[in-house]
Figure 1 (spheres, rainbow, N blue to C red):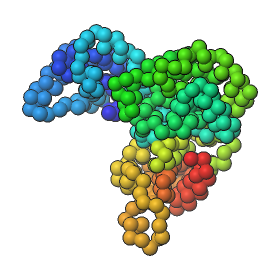
Figure 2 (figure 1 turned 135 degrees about the horizontal axis):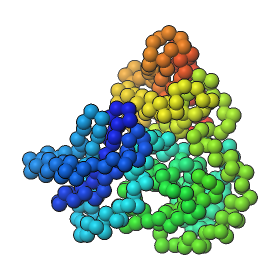
Figure 3 (figure 1 turned 45 degrees about the vertical axis):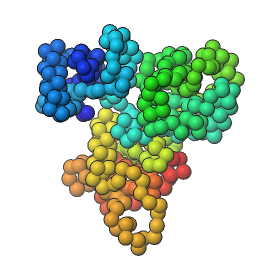
Length: 382
């Protein structure tokens, strides 16, 4: 699903498979929620095409025009065996914030990479120690610290969650309106698609939240404020240092080359990534354009040059497969002349893949060297 043209409208439409009754329709224009909704006649026509195709064993997944994309989705078993349509429509409203964030121009990239968006706190060991102690006191093994939808630190239990839920849970938290505390029922697509778990969130500082995944216990009142004060009050300064990490991902002062306008680092085995388009200053292009360039470049290199899964461990240079799998590629948008266009370079070494967006001043002959140096500097972090 993608936006068709600049400022185009994206519609996400969900219909009951058997009756064609609209369950919800969400629209986005230019990365923001749109007031324009699909007319009922269009919904009816699309459902008619969908039903006609079903009779011929053909599934309609999307319908596109020059500047509009419409997507039809069929949900899990609960959505296909609907007993009360109005009750289901009401229940689905809880997902609207999450759905709108996928349709909009998100600062995250986990939806594309299927890796968890992470940040690197300046005092990570202190936060990790407090997180482990808090999890033990709360009686759950699934705890994480999230800033603006990105994971700052998490327990081993949290990291063992399957890929869909590990990506979706922090994204969900980042999409919800600010609230001091929440007790939120969630279904885990991989681990528990039919029985809900409780997602408890506690706001430590604005946009910085503590997240717990648990069963019937503990009650929210047991965690707030007693356990919060005990474990997190002494760490106010390290917690405040996490707040700027939302857009930056990296701690202030981390040495990056001044030509770097954006970067995406993926650990292919751990399924974690660092993504930022605001490492230095406010140069052109805009953050929105930088995100779009890196997302498109990731799609290109993943589908064309690099395998989607991590390859075999590093071996000697004379082995045959080393000549078959590329290690680096680059793309120049504009001309090769210095000072024009932008440069994009991708480098893969072992289990890590790095994508860089570079300023027009960066010479093409130095792209691989710059990417290699940056990857070595980032490797201890992720």
